[in-house]
Image 1: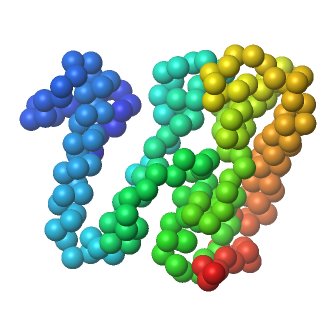
Image 2 (image 1 turned 135 degrees about the vertical axis):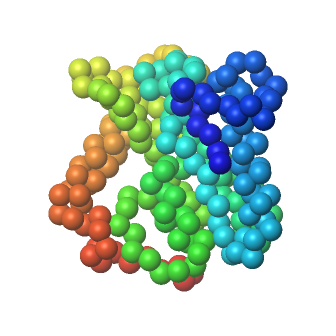
Length: 210
């Protein structure tokens, strides 16, 4: 089985990591465990018809340059299915955990009910990604991160260049659009949930036909 990078870190005695630090050793162990799992799965008759999804709930707060560390928001999303996906490729555009379900269903080429706020990452472009923690939320586009705080002190940073300058006054239109997007996402999610529209009775059906 695979391990977790949440403490306490438990590394079996039969595995000898190269790193002395446990926080790095456990990453080695998880990587090794995933390899072992996939090698065993490859011998099964269902392997060619299976899509393996590897994702994390959050990253590690390593570089705390902004209120919401980008290393905490940036998580892996790996889809592994050699016979289905073909040649490996890397997608560098914005994506969100919300997009996993629609993206997988698109790969399966089945009609489905999309009662989420996610998109199919292979067919659509996400203009923003949103995350929140404690008393603040963040909205990201391909270059900037907008941070909205409960105390009313908001910021707009150019994270692509690791800039600590607040561009809120210089780019008010961008900040306003990102703020509206964040608030709209939260309000829409609450509206759907209160009315039970996140369940199967939603009538918004997506077709995989081109």
